[in-house]
Amino acid sequence: VCSSPYYYACGGGGYFGSGGSGCTSGCDESRTIKVVGGSSKLNSFDTYGSGGGSIVKVNTAHGGSGGGKIVINTKELKVDGTIRADGLSTPSNTHRYAPGGGSGGRITINTNILTIAGGAIISAFGGSGSFAYATAGSSLSYLRCGGGGSGGYIYINYLTGTTNERIGATTKVDGGQPGYSGTLYCKPGEPGHIEIQTTSTKLKTSLSQNSITVEKNKN
Image (tube, rainbow, N blue to C red):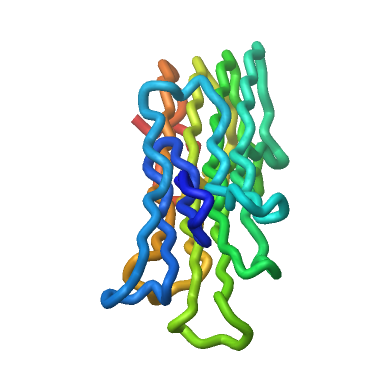
């Protein structure tokens, strides 16, 4: 995602999807230098998230770290807090370089009995890239922009569960944002993925863009 020591901006880390591309030299169509983001790890999900691209020749211009790998195997699990494997964002860099954001990691939950309380958060989103200018000031002609990291992967497998009402948990596997919005070539990371498997006939689990909802099956 940043293979040359002469790049001044980097792409984001890849995981479920690809990391967003970074760009330099103004990030416009006439003279941009585009730096691709990290590729998807579709065949290697049993790994940690990928770090965002770092500037090779500058020790302080590191990309965001990739999210961790969390594996929970238990007979019974109640989620009433937060489980995170998020990629880290990169701050705007004072050295005029723009590293990329880290990808989300992986969360795996295998349990017999699952209880999700209201307000629970399960997330593996990508970190955001940074931006900088090649010279003093803020002219867009000298913009450098780091790409966002890909979203991660959340897998939940349970046999049965308990709930007395419709319960929603916030889930986040969004790709990270680019360091600077509104350019053609600095891109967010691609979104991650959530997968749920269950044999329960008592509960109905549904997924929307940013939430898991568990409720009693009325059938």
